[in-house]
Length: 409
Image (cartoon, rainbow, N blue to C red; front, side, top):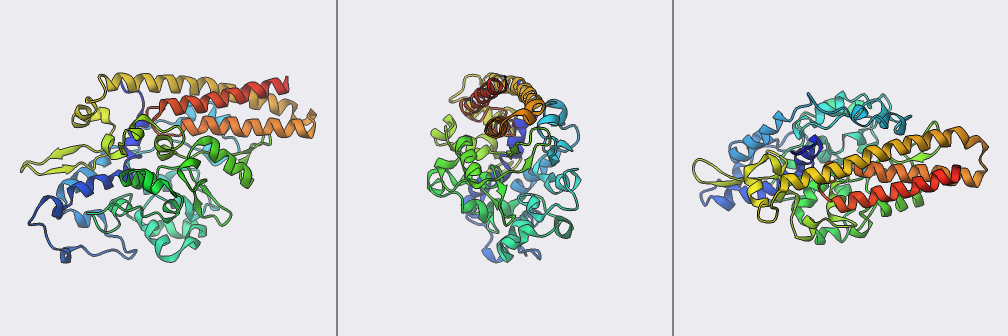
């Protein structure tokens, strides 16, 4: 049985933008010769965004299935600080130690960002990135300076969670990467990966806030889209998210690198076979009148008979494979997280007695090992998207910790 809610997140998370893949296949003109003319396009709001409800009349099935994502509510979600107790030590001194819950569906993106205890009076608007298409449109209109404005000054202006505009702009017949920061980071990946995946990837990626507080990616090509290359990027930049109060190590907080895990570095088998996120997370359904459309309820393939039937062309037992992949990865995550805590405690106890060179290397080991581990843990499939890449990154974390314990012995 499929173990985690995190893979479901990938259905609701990795697929938020997947709403895109659906619409291109379900545009009224593409499926209905009598489709309404363009002059029936609904009016945009003050941000220039046509809200999802405005499209309900033209795209009733897509809208109804999009609304179904409300069932993936915040209640009952995992508290990762309890699921992974080591995080209380690993994230010490950083906002994620205050609260880190499993994400709800895209219907709750604005709700979740306003409710998290990580937001403070100092929080900037860049934290609203990917939480609402209205913020995306505001940045597109006014420029990168919006990212550095105060969170509290802007958040109450927005009322539309992740919806049509994120993946389509204001044209449901097209797919569009609307987030400029991500579009500029793709480089050769723009041609090498399906646009259906890119529209998902624009929110499901590893990012950081640069010196100007602009949401940015630590790469500009497909070759840079793996954990080792990103770590090299951050090291060359001298970037850190925070300093661990016990070890003094300048640490990095990985985000949710679904796109990079599937398409970058040690590319997944699904990516190599030419599949996009939507192929696995958005079912093609048929209405009572026989019209075929892409469902915009974002689900794990294990939750959809239509998707399972399609997956059965290549997988004899997808549910069993996913369960095995996830158990293998999460078992190692738990074990290695305890090793990281032991390393933090060991380094903290001896750091004042170390010479500068040894201390610098010991702190670097903490930084690197924790990033490799975090990169796997925060990717919302628990290894199912690319088990080989997940284990490769956990191998690197283990090797670094072995070196670190030997160094401090």
